[in-house]
Length: 169
Image 1 (tube, rainbow, N blue to C red):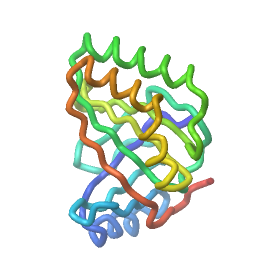
Image 2 (image 1 turned 135 degrees about the horizontal axis):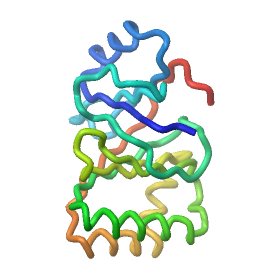
Image 3 (image 1 turned 60 degrees about the vertical axis):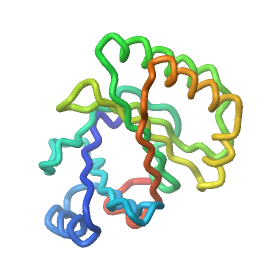
Image 4 (image 1 turned 180 degrees about the vertical axis):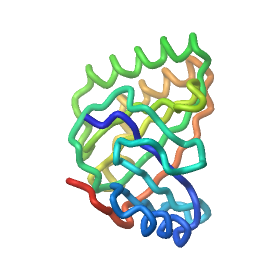
């Protein structure tokens, strides 16, 4: 089981230089769907971070397959300690009780190692249309209710896979 995911954002050429300089690591290079966003590099080596970005996460929860090929949706949220206890319990109960959405490969709950009140909910989908269709369902609306209950203003980011390096998929 994967315990840590370390990440970096930046220009593709810069992230590729990190890949070249660390050939023993397992990387996933993601392209932004929104052309104004940076590329995103995930280090899934489950080792100490080689990045200086502070975007390093502990895997708190994982459901689904250990497959990295697909369409990525990241939801970044910030919660207080008290809010995080309730919200995480609600979301994990919600995920466990739902039928698996069509096209979902994996769901991760990640907690920032440097700022414990920052979380990322990462979903990986077979294709972008599966994610778009899920957002139209009542299950997604119920999940949105949990967010509004805490008055969270999440940041959403969507990516597709550019390259996978040393990934056992």
